Image (cartoon, rainbow, N blue to C red; front, side, top):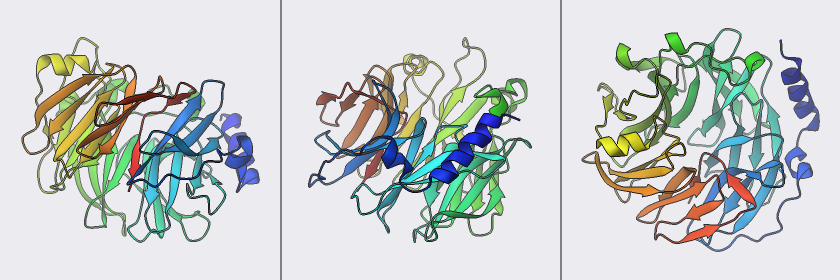
Length: 365
């Protein structure tokens, strides 16, 4: 067993509330009056990790430090708190309030589990669900946390797959859509992928109240190395998902798909040059329901594409070095990069070169 994992978790438990704030002083910015703000994890060029909230004017209006690299952020509109999750195989999540009414709170994963970087709140804000790894049994789990009792972990249920990644809550407020990436990992081996030859990714619909598996979809056997990773929901309730291919680099499988309750998974055809440009890797997916569009990004291919949801037609492809974070922005999308760039929907660009923005960008209305 990797004792560093246990030591780190015990340290986080001992640190408790305020740990993130103590690592790096928060920026003393007042929130601008804007229609929306955007949250994302980052790495500072001078060292250290954190989470930031950006105004529409692309200014950092809040930041808090993280003990290690973060991944995605989820927001609860009821309490107006957010949670940033550690990048897999990290063992922390940090609860923060970008309006600064409370101090950040660090929550450690329980023994035998680590986070996969994603989670979602229940509609009433009472519960937080997080994708987790039961790493000794190579089983995906959803951890359940009581958000009204200090985020105390109160239970779990299986994702019915290996390597669960992103998880979304459907409009019914009860059904969870879960992307089981199919990749087995264990913290003893860092981020090493242990079962590439036998991968079996799946897409699961699960009842969050009972933990019951409602429906599970598998890709064709020939595509068993196509790891389903990230998702977004469009204006019709269709779940769009992006994949990362773990097979030979010479292969060019379709990388974007759609899922709906009662229907089989459907992969989206794309022009060959667009598909090749992604280099077998979709890093993030976002939907703009008001515009009827979906964006998918590829930091490996230094590009992102905008797709018309109703027709699955690629409307535009844009080149941007190390682009990954995408979020709805007015009639288009805002994008962030590992080089510190922030590109707004109107095409204007700002560079905050002290920051390397991480994989995901969340729009907070």
